[in-house]
Length: 630
Image (cartoon, rainbow, N blue to C red):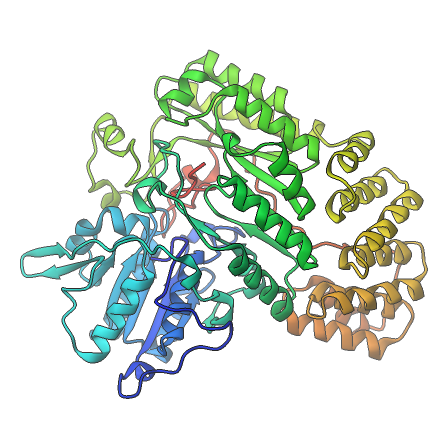
């Protein structure tokens, strides 16, 4: 449940849910949609975020009049989970069940069942979908499995339970019956994704970091590729379905106006496949006047220079490609459907327009040789990525490799009941461990040596044109090279390109504050607030400048506004602490942009942490697990 995308029967304007049908009982039924990552992932920024799809399911239910809400239990103790369930007492409990978090997810079901035997527990997501009968057979706390897309299925299930109707006719379910289980007819994929309400307009929740959660958007479903290690083709299908550009832009505008979001991450499996749509959406973003920076992921055979230029113009800062290997033989075995020439060309074009370049790589493929690994190392040196992730090959239910690897390892589906392993590791021999270490080291070396030079930044502006994103990157590079005067000229150019630009004023304010001119810094920060009034960082930076001017009451007001908008704002927290201690400010750099955690893996002597020692709730998920359909 809630692995990513979703749909509903109709769309209401953002923030205006449809009233419940009189006499339907929907308003009285409480529904809780829950997620909990495994124990070891609770401190990982990405693993602890809820799947985007739970938000869309919640929006669908609330839009239909149900009392539905979200719960992210990733950082809750089990006693806190019990307290939340006892307080809410849902009639329906929906749980997102991946392979990596199956221990935690199924324990939620057990806890809820013990507390309230009448609660109806339904699980969904890739692991539940692909092993539905086994989940029902071995986990009596679970009443049903939502197969594939969960939005319309959960809506019909909620209506049936509220009205006492038979559940066996609802498409897209696996249900218990005496002596076993059965599947209802399959549900047809939702064709019109514009029927999806915006999740952020329906976010009644507990334990959810809204600012972080809303950064992740999905604008399409499916992936045209058939990579053997990925479950996307079987779960979502290979036919792509898209939200319209207007529907996406409507959500982006709502997020900025309501929550002050200025950076988002498009988590479509392959964002750029439809060239016409990609260009149209990027032009719409440019024309919208939104103050927006973003990233996405795609395939190397789904980009070209025109697409990348318009993406850069629209604010794309970073793109991730699923490359997997520099060996033709390995690419063929993984059924990637790409050629090394396409990898090289896509990476060169990405660097040409000035985006940060990331690659996903895989080692430990059955039959992979030392020469195959050397080919990958040569490719890394050739394309010079700024960032990258390497993962040993781990397979999951629903992938094309799954049955072959089960036979290779001599296991069956009971493996998931008896093991706490995050996935089914294909190889753990010394050669595969060495390969992982070599590729990981090469990625780190590339990240250290592949930074753009000032000349490259100037060339990016020539190639892309006079737009905010390349000019901002040029100014930041000049700052890093100790050229604040030239950086200031770049930031002033941003204000010529986009009058009132948030990014221009934030950076100019930052330069002024570092130069000791807090008055001018405060002026720029106020104009940044005028551009995006609900952007928490603009308020906390203004508070910092006012504190330097010893306007403590005004500074405190700005810090408190920032914390109301985003309770995790560290600048505001520290500013209020210093005000309470009446400390005089010191001149120091204040970050202008909220940076995300690195996507790179921590160095390990052997395997990354998610494949080392078992921990209570299962293993942490490797980046992109079960949905890396590049």
